[in-house]
Image (cartoon, rainbow, N blue to C red; front, side, top):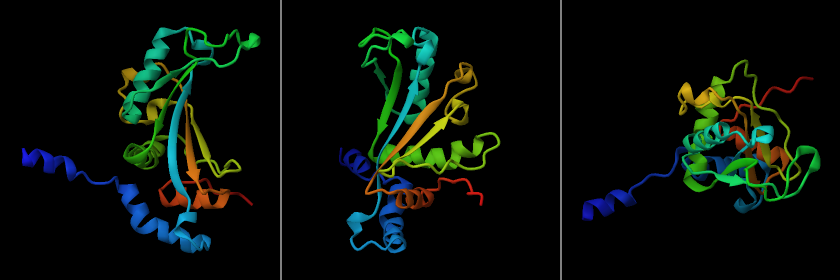
Length: 195
């Protein structure tokens, strides 16, 4: 009984979280010239979402999207229904079929996903020259993927129905330069800016 309790309490922190707390936070504070350690940008959550768009009635695509998000993130996704009625897209508010699915990652799962995404999935992108450099005003970052097959967790059969996904990094105390500096520390390869 005591061995089982000891085994559950000895779980280690994810690699990137441990690096952030021991090394990256201090380096970022010095590089950005911040007075207080609480001003240093930190990753708050990662949202992985997939829109089903015009295929919202296709049950096979819905199952593929749910399977992809579950395997890639290790967490069950929530299905999203329309919030507004839009006649041009033939959508009514609260319509029966989901128009998308998303997973919100926090804590250990967030850092583990970021580690796998930056070091395993992104190098598998064909003709990859780095991720884009556009941040929003709050310093949050979005990256879109057109093909889910870059994730090694998925088998060949599970990538037959191709769909994209949107990955949103929500950053606390972020600005464009501070958020980019933090994500570069985590291993996200940004494309070189041409002069």
